[in-house]
Each structure stands twice: as C-alpha cells, then as structure tokens.
Image 1 (cartoon, rainbow, N blue to C red):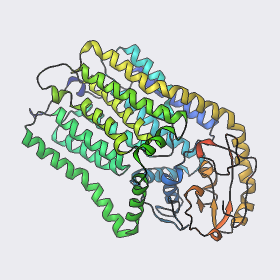
Image 2 (cartoon, rainbow, N blue to C red):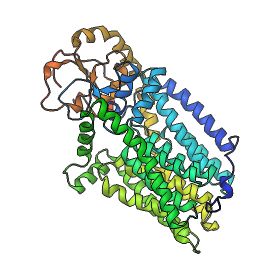
Image 3 (tube, one colour):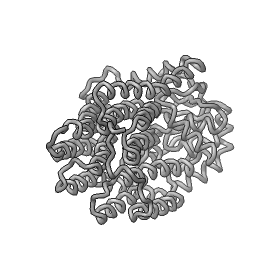
Image 4 (tube, helix red, strand yellow):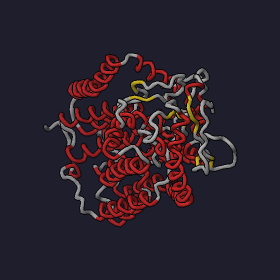
Length: 485
C-alpha cells in the first residue's frame, strides 16, 4: 500500500451538518415547492430522443420508441441511439411516479440536486467558510441547473453525476487498487449514458490513478490495462445483449453517430453550436473560453517541485479535454459547457489535495465560482420569468387537453398523433402512440398519421411546431385526421 498516496482531505467522509449542506437542503425544499406551484412545460427538444423509451417502458410497451431522427416508420423499435442507462433510469422513475409533467420536473430536479450535492462535497475545506456559504447560496438559487445548465431532457446531468463521483471516491478512499478499478467501472458505465462523457471519464480515470499512485511505470500500466478491461465489460455486455435481441438496433446507433459526424464542414458545425440558439449558445462559447483561461491559471499556480508532471496531471488532462472537445465535437455546444463545468469542479477537488500555491487558492476558487454562476444567473432569471408568465396559460392548456382528449382520440383512430416536443408530457399518458413531427423522414406515409397537435411559438410566426424551448401553450388544439404537418 505504500505505493499509493493518501491526503488528509481523503480520510474522512464529509460532514453533512455543515452550513453549506443546510443551505442546499433549504434551497431544494423551496425549489420543490416552486416547481409544484409552477409546473409549466420546460421540455427540451430531445425529450422524444431520450425519455420516450423510458416512458414506453413504464407504460408497458417495452424499452422501445418510434421517434428516431430521420425515420420513415411509426413502429416502435428497441431503443439504441446513445447509451441506454439514462432512459432506463428515467423509465424506472416513471414506473413509480408516472410519465407526466410533474413527475418529469421532479426527476430533473432530483438529478440536478444530486449534482449540486456533489459540487458542494468537492469544495476545498481550506477555503474560508464564508466563501463556501456564499457559494452554497448561489448554488441553491440555481439548483435546477445543477450548476451546469437547465435540464433539456438530455443525459448530460446524469453523466456529470457519474464523473464527479470519481473525484468524490478519490476524496473518501484515495487511490488503491480496488478504488482505481472502480473508477474505470464508472467510466465504462458513463459511456453507456453517453459516449462523449464515457471518453471523458476514461481520461479522468487514467489521470486520477496516475496522479494518486506512486506505482512504477510497469505496475501502473498493468493496473490501467486491468481498468480498461473493467470499463469495457459493461459496454461489451450491452452490445451483445442488443445484438441478440435486435441486430438492427446497432444500425440505429450508427445512424445517430453519422448525424453528429456528418460531412458538414467544421466551421459550419461550430457556427451551429455557438449561434443556433441566440445568446444562450454564445454564452456556452464564453464559458468554454473562460474555463480554458481558468485551467491555465490553475496550471500556473501548481507549485514548482520534483514530480511536477504527476502533480499537475489533473489540470493538464482537463486542459486537453477542453481543447479536444470543440475539435472532435464542434456541433455539440452542450459539450463545451459540460467540459467547462467538469474543469472547474474538478479543480475545486484539486485545490483540496494540495500542490497549489496557498496564496492563489482563494483566487482560483472565486474565479471558478464566477465561471459557474455568472452565465447561469441571467439565464435562470429569464427561465423564472417564463415560468411565472406562462403559468395560467399552462393550466388552461392542460384543462383543454383533458376536455378534448376523447375527440382527439376519435380523430386519431388509433394511428400516430404528431405532438411537438413542448407538449410531450401533456399527451403521453393519454396517447401513447405519439410521434415527434421534427423527426419525420421525407418518405413517410401520411396515411399513418391520425391527428396533429399544434401550439404557438413564443415569438411571432405561424410554425405549428416551434422548437420546444420556444413553444407556448396554445389556445386551441388542432386535430386533423390524416393530415401531415
């Protein structure tokens, strides 16, 4: 065991009676009450992609979905587009609490709360308690974001929970042979949430093992090789299961990958990531740049001493991940923010294990906190305004849907009902055969569509299927038998 290093900060579990946790708990209670009072739809555009298979599982239709990007079929098929863990977790939750707006809100809030608790746990104990309390207050104010972004019905928040758990394991147990293999297992499971985050987890696992151990190169390489085998085990098992149940599911996964890595130029993909959603997309790019500058500052603050490369390996790896993300995934703006979030929060953990010049620790902590909260504050304010503004129209819409459910069912005649992503949870429990109109392929058969549900956009325009985050409850429900959008 002498080959493994343990720090004082790793020898005890966190004390959950610390004021920062009490503030967090108070914030969580307030947010639960607020989301019950204001359950307005804040559905992301990917709800069909990641939560529809979970709802179908909860409603007894198996782990399936008909809504695939570019499909010409309305038939449910075994779901495989990214990793299956996120929709399976949501399906388990929906099996208990239902597949409704309210249950979806609580699911998102629960994942974000876990993420916030992890961030608080990673705060360095050496930082002044007043700064920690101020950080906890700021985090409580934006708790539904998890300190990352408002949930968009994507697996990002759950994947980040897994990634930060790796640092917490290092905090509590240090690096031992068993904990090292467990880090790789987490990386493999994270890959089954989302391949991008699994790759990040793999890099972090190797880095944390290298940083926390004093093994010679040969033994370190052997341990990493065992870790890679452990990480690959759940992935290979999942591939085998899918291949046995439905070999065509592998084709759907590769089709989704082709959409991400298509022939569109790098610059065009980058423009999509940074300009497709207005100011929110631009803020993603700004957070990425700030995080990169932040990591450079952390690296410059590492104490120059023997073994500097091992000591600085964590911020070095974070910096490489920051640089690699837009180069490999230029279209995925959410990944820019995610890796910025990981860089800042993992740097908080790095501060807690020493190696950084003491006089710079407070400056690093404050600058990291500003990177997390400065962009989230205005975004959260506008989301709150939207929730308050649309509350009454939301309840009117929900009542109208209930009143017209029988008529819409008769109009559909058992065929597919096209429902915008913004209204997914308002319709799913009443009509399980709903389909995302944005996923239609030019070759689809309009005769398979029984009804179309339209809503109005937040901005001017007559598009019946506005982007989910721009949708507003409509005053009418349009049901037209056999009518394509």
